[in-house]
Image (cartoon, rainbow, N blue to C red; front, side, top):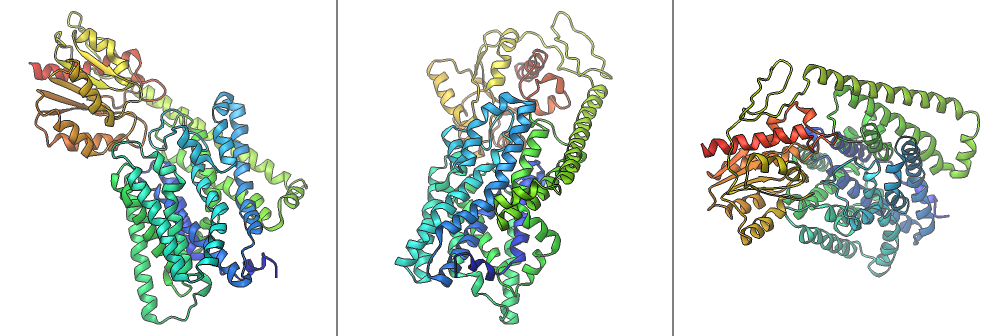
Length: 594
């Protein structure tokens, strides 16, 4: 027997494909920024557990049959399964950028190279690329970090497992060893994570995410699919289904409610997710399970089989069709992008992944060069271009209608020359206020503070504005201490942070506790077309209720439907926008002075 024969007896588990479907749909929903899937990033964590289980299960079956692990055959199978589809996607993205934005392609060269060699996650870590707080156009291949972790596991784990089996042949001892590795990895995430800061280092790291894969691997040692059979008692079957159903419900609740900035997520929250995932997988692997039959229904199984294709194609479609990432998509735009994603995924699965997996690269290339390939390719190309054109037309039409319904005319108003604004076709700005002295007022902010500094200094002579590009709330305390040491901290402090990323409420509370002796603190809500916008604003409003000297300046509400105040990134202000922003701040400060 050769090393490939073990695959012929491996049992197909449709319920596992159903879980794959749920996981990839959660990730797609998360990247579409659906409110009901704010925890959709957890789908990647579920995939890690699945990979750990299925790969270890396959390796152990091979060892059971042959008393050996054919490493080279294993690695070739993995590469044939994963690499061709990813290379095809990378080529598509590269060609698209060559035509539309060659400068951007050059800036992403490191991302492309690191993805091909499956070290993208470490490339992102060493170049300080944030998964959560990144500003500007999102990378169309920014999701490949997770594939790098999986491929690193595929490269190293068979060797480690082969050695472990030789030195610890008993399953119980082997499970303990794997559990220890998982504990070390989970502890590393909890220890390395710093509350209130960008969690990208622990989110990307192989060392801090490996516990999910190890938990799946430990499950495969103790609950191998090839040892399970249908002959279990009705009571055991019902118990399994109840446990699995409860676990699945918990996973869905986590996907619905989890926030990517919750400290608890990085302090063993991902570990909890992995354990629940392993419990669900153990039930779905049992052939007698009714839950496995339910999740193995044809629609979910169909999506699950193509989950890898859907994962690698959905994010390029989303980012390339909306390169700035600032527009909130309407339902028709989302449907068009989903259709394109599924078309590309089906083609990838049908013409690249499955044929290459079964017959190899050379044989499939010969088939593609035959006449059978050209007709589907032509139909697909024209369909894809038509869908892109339709989606682009919808976007432009929506923008034109929005601007025609509510044009933005912002006029600077001074105390000597007040102009009446027609509310039918212009935007209202705060009423002009008498000149207010700025002594004793300090503004601490990010690039927006720099954006409006000159306007504020004109309107509030003597004000101190301390702004810095990229500043986050976690840095505010040190800024305050520095200003206090230089005797530049006023007794009325405006804190305008949150544009560059979320923060936890405990760090904000600590900051406000240190300012209890000040006369007045103003917290400015943010408007940023990123998924942390609502998290920031809710945290600001929740904390404000606990401090009588703290007041909210609601920039988010004041700037609603005033798109012409912003440049194309939807955050930074035009000259008119800077005037408007400053007027909002001055109005609130003047109310308290009066």
